[in-house]
Length: 274
Length: 267
View 1 (cartoon, one colour):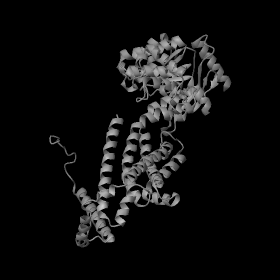
View 2: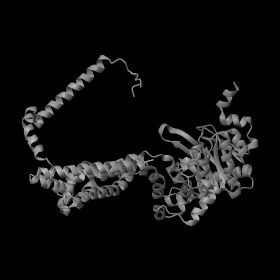
View 3: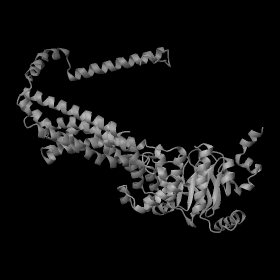
View 4: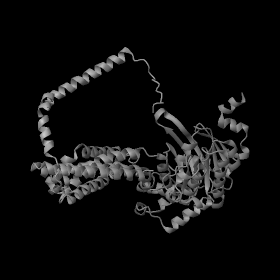
């Protein structure tokens, strides 16, 4: 079993990531099924994520993209398989999980900010995992934390809105705040679950630019779920195609031809051709 | 208002529905008649005793304002009982409310225990709690505050549970994903969302507490109610009416104040 996994990983690395011998995240034979209705969301998905790599997970809705991301930071429990972060398994133990999540920022489709708190406080919540519960009890942060949070806000060009309530910002701005919150964690990886699905195309491109920008400047790996093919082609260094919970493509955007798309989107494109 | 047109979605009532409705009315009437009998309610008795009630009311006038002398301290006591009662209620209600909320506590046994606890506190009236606390810690405003605190703790806790369970779960998930701990998540994702509601509930139950505290005084838990019941026992109804007027003014003032505060805070 272990041998198989090792061989499999070696194969993917040499085939796809080339020299990337030291992955930040390894997804190893991960399956997830929901007990009720025995729905299989993911079946036996494996791939490695290189350091600083911008990966787009592409697939129609219901393909299991969201479940895959949520298995990585254990917002969802994989039924089988494991996730390695820096070569170490992300496990259920509370303290270890906290340390793992600290290194994995997450950006959501609906931004998920605390609407009644200020923009700055929202970004500061990215620092909570570094601070004691007692300190948080008084809503107190260190000077360094506040400075760092502001710096993260500057990176998404929202420093001037730091003291506004989060719900006074537009959708695109809120998503940038969410990116700043993830950056405040000093993460190695950012998981972005359909980050632009509720934004119009122009704002979407802006948000994706910020995401790519921080990835390149800070060497943060990004795993980004998208369902728009053109965005995937434009932003991804590598695309992983999911369909009905199975990985059916893993390669550079240039290899994403019509035949592959047909496999990912299956029926939909066939219908479109009729 | 008058230009609202109402469209009846079910214009025809079937015979069966009418019959069911009629049967229900008859059943309710029968039950009311039976319970009136159990209470020995009789209109004749009421008419007979009207003159007596009238005589008592007449003896209340004019109010004897000398009763106001020395009434300041008990009045302040009453407000303080309500204030501390509400504070104690929040201290009891908030932790229990968090433990009983489905989206915060996944351990169903603890949830059930907290809910049961809240139910017990709530179903025993503050009057009964006051009698127990007066017996335990003696006469005075302190047992009154404790009694209000315990009973209102049960009520507020239940209201907090509803408020907490209705929050937007998305920020909660986002904070969990950052690696923040349980308490940190509660402080930063739950409290900001429920704070306006909590403040509003507390103000309202403070208001109710002021009314309740006047009653608690009657059984020896201090405050203005104690003065009121003393004048009744002495058959000094002119003083009784003066104190009743003070209570009326006090409760009205507190109602107004809390309404203004609530409007200012909940935005």
